[in-house]
Image 1 (cartoon, rainbow, N blue to C red):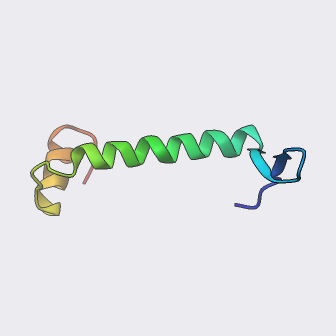
Image 2 (tube, rainbow, N blue to C red):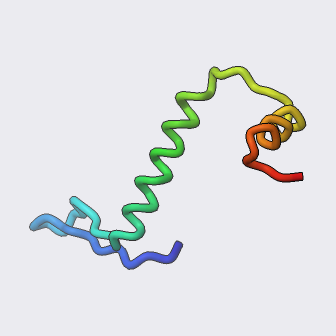
Length: 64
């Protein structure tokens, strides 16, 4: 992801904040949300891949 970051600096030139394009901010927020879901689900029971596919087919989400 190539970005056009801009930095906000204080009087001594130290970076204090960053500005980035809104689409990059939104992508970062989506990634953060995805990571939160992963963390919340980390302890959940897992199922075999074949069983998962069978459930998707049964529910009409996946076709043969």
